[in-house]
Length: 144
Image (cartoon, rainbow, N blue to C red; front, side, top):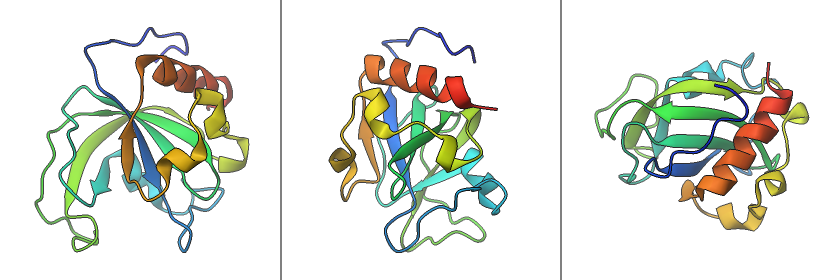
């Protein structure tokens, strides 16, 4: 995806948290076996995400945005091997578009016009097309 892609106003844009205070993502999250997050992501309740929506991944403890993925499936509550179904009963299949492999190099969440406190106790929030465009530009500037 080009870093200057114009956001599609018909498409939903979301900020999706990964990790938490007691279980933050490691700096080299891809090398730590987290590659599954680039194919499927979980939710505590049924999300309003539909195929074609874009999700910006946010590393909670790091307060950084580090990937953009596109939803390729409708949400499902089917059990998944190796997943914590009790905590994350819903999931959405995704395809990676832009990825920063080291969180230390990823841009801070403030670079996309969102305050870190907005994600407190949230698995995901809707963001504006402008915030999405800022995320694509910021992540694209450091992505590999």
